[in-house]
Length: 190
Image (cartoon, rainbow, N blue to C red; front, top):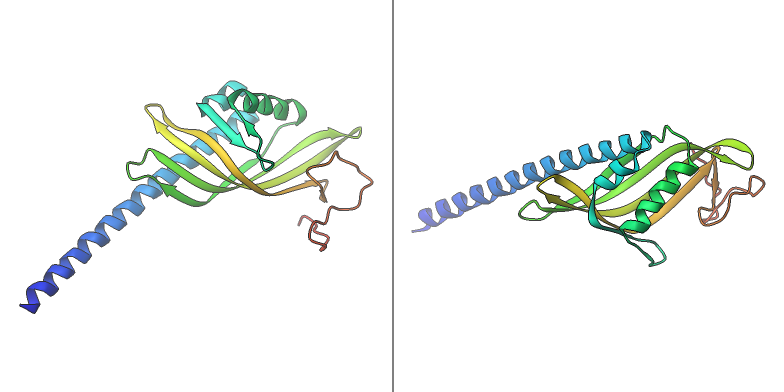
């Protein structure tokens, strides 16, 4: 009697392992599809194409800022316009998916990402290099026209460097300010 039970358990283990492997492959495919969307988003920024940027988001897209304010789709469209007006291309936007959770039916994906960007900006009468990074959670929804960004929240670990010197991202730029050192360790960008 024990041999059939062992065979049944072994068979069940194989079925479960196969299902887990198939799920991981499906999630890997979703990750590839999201990475393609991130490439489109970066290209739309480089082309300064607000319509294409907005087109990669759901109509109800919104962001929840670190201070708890909610930016609806209109607010975030204006934010994109201001970014493009205030900064000079190329923008060199890099988004790395650090963790991905996909719904059972592959219709919702939640990505923990590291977003990094380099661009130039006129500040204090001089063209300066600005590097930023942020960690955030991004929720994507899949519809008939593919994956679109639905929500950005859990925005944290923001860093900003101007000409290699770390600055406080919550304050206006002051070229004479000492490097921003939130941890007391004087951080420099490599």
